[in-house]
Image (tube, rainbow, N blue to C red; front, side, top):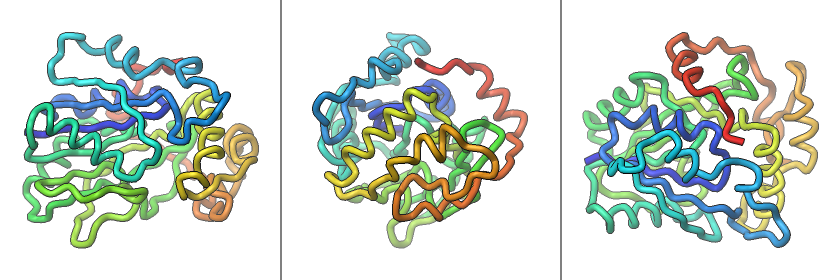
Length: 265
């Protein structure tokens, strides 16, 4: 039994493509979502006033009678242990799987790659397998250079307590997959990206995360040109993303993405 588990706070532009990219290989897909940032800031707009909710996106694109997909609302005040909460919920509902893969709604696998990732994880003796990321910047034609920031994680058997670094700091003795996953987190529509930026400004210090630069959205993302440098949102680490570089997306991935090109706003 293979579970795929999503956590969603905002950013449903690529959710349908993401779920479609794992659908055939997953036995169950669990989607836990919240309509508020972790910190529940006062007088903050609801994300559903800006973009379609995960529920709307999912049931507009998948059969409402599909027993493979379970969608439920939940809220916690910190990302620490959030995936563990979602995993425990899935186990209580259907029992323990042979493997679980944790995903974000802006992560999308190229055709056939998720199947390769699952096969590799099953063959490995390690209990952990992490996929490297192809991080695109604003459009399909630009990306960030490869960095030690891993994407989807597959676990067999024991699932450790997951904190901030579940996608950036693999546990000791884990293995990094040969199969990469696309990350469209910097390609969201303008309204959602602004919401994401403002939410991070509010909750980062409260939850002990790196505080973003207040000017990042306007100066680095919205007004970006190919010559813009220091693109990392974190105010103290802007140099970690020096500059976006041109990227030619493989034809099969471009075709897959173009099958559902509409932003969910």
